[in-house]
Length: 279
Length: 300
View 1 (cartoon, rainbow over the protein chains, first blue to last red):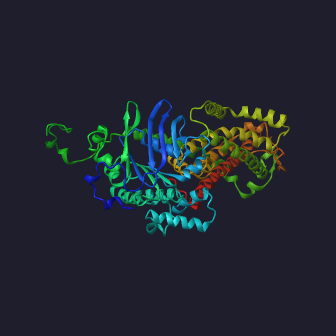
View 2: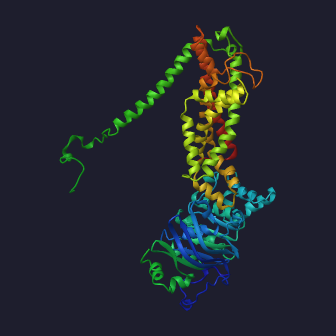
View 3: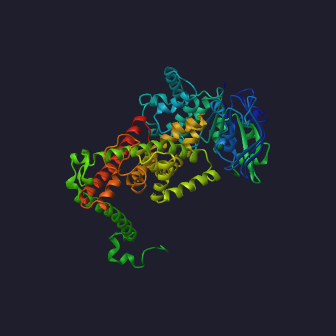
């Protein structure tokens, strides 16, 4: 599997290739005519897209066009808000995610979520990772210790914190806190990782560390990342979806391999947006 | 410069180099400090009065000896025991019921739902009800209808009815103040609703819950009217929870109003009451800090 950085950024001979070269497109998440409304207000409408397994998919577009709401549907965080109505079809590996009888807790174990603001629990670093493991039934302390170490190594935090696992997580820097949050999601070995602008609250250097970390996850975890940073989407993603607010609801304008979106967009709106003319 | 905030000819003025700020906020500062000082002064005045009048009588003997001569002589031993027992009954009833109701209000009801609003409104009305009404209710319900008679049990339960509205509202506010990020973070990791409340929301709200407990204890210890009707005013040592017993505040009231020559003892008893309250306050604060440190729970 080639890394994105190894490839030249401009490959004219790939101009019309519509598939990303990270993987065979194999849909894991399937949305059909998905709409979400908060009471009267429509967040997004009529979104149909397939998220491919093992790939990094970027959701881009201006603020308020339903990207985060779309992300929240996939692990049913929408349940936390009153008066949310989701219609259409949404499947993860063939499971209907909109079924009211769905085991939401099992779903959230398979689909992790990283927020824009780092939000570790106000506990020690160790407890931050231990509590989710215990909640999901890992009884053995030794197994938990191993899983915690593995997750911290994965996000490159182990060397920095291995001597102070029992100190408050809130004392870490912003970038470290965000990596801890990613480790906390990864410690449950999810299949899908949803990331809602994970770098935008961090300084550029810390953001770069997170970006490299997401890059490392390619092929192992299916990543859906909302970002306002087009350069980041281009560097990182295999697939990109452009959302746009049309009328009073967000809609999916174009979805395709990231190179096609950035170099040969089919829609005028996409062309204007990626060239920085609007949005 | 075309536009300047400084007066015209400022560059010639001898004040030019004196960068002394004009005290613009002086009025507001004065008002705020005066208000704070008046409140502090009132507290200090009460404390001074109680210590001056009752301080001389205060001794270990006074605290443990039984009462004699209608309270004019002897100590307040049995009365302290009754007070403690009434408080225990009250807290045992208030803590589970109050926590349960507050969690229901803040976690299981939407902000503007009909049932939540109804319960909240009722609690606010109950919190403002004069204590004599609670006393009458306690007398007819606990003493007569339930047949508990004049007893520490009746008194404690009546106090619980009084304390519950204050306690529930304080805890509900504390629970609602727990940041949404904490709930969202735990929900996203697949914690069940129960685990979310028990592992994150309640621990984060502990300081607020303790404030509720202290407010409740304060209200309970200060209560006289409701207890006169329910737990009685005999001064002997209570033998069980179904025995009648006199609370400290009732003792102060009796000595001050109905026993000629009881003023000094009334003051000394009031002093014990104040010390008791301050002690509980400090103990609760210390316990919260200890607990937070042990759990590594930091409130930002």
